[in-house]
Amino acid sequence: MKAYELLFFINPSSDDETRLAVMKRIDDAIIGNGGVVDNIDSWGKRKLAFEIDKLTDGDYTLIDFHTEPASIAELDRVLHILDNVVRYMIVRRDDRS
Image (cartoon, rainbow, N blue to C red; front, side):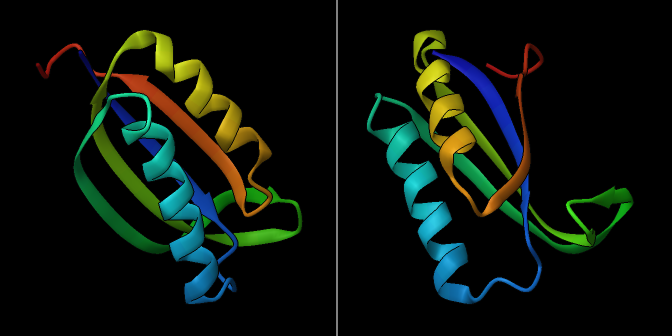
């Protein structure tokens, strides 16, 4: 398995149930394909460099995980269809094993 990190943000005005639903769906996508979540780091509300979809702030979360490269496509698909996720980025971490 390879090491990856996922950074995403949602609308900061979203309620806790919405945040938990997004996290549950992402966890299911990672763990359901044989991956392991190593760390979840909630960065909280941060100012955006530029306005995106009329938002000036975002609620950021960073997830470190290990999974097979073939399952990244499924995670990308799940993130793409989640309405509450405004932007996301998945990066392979070669410096971690």
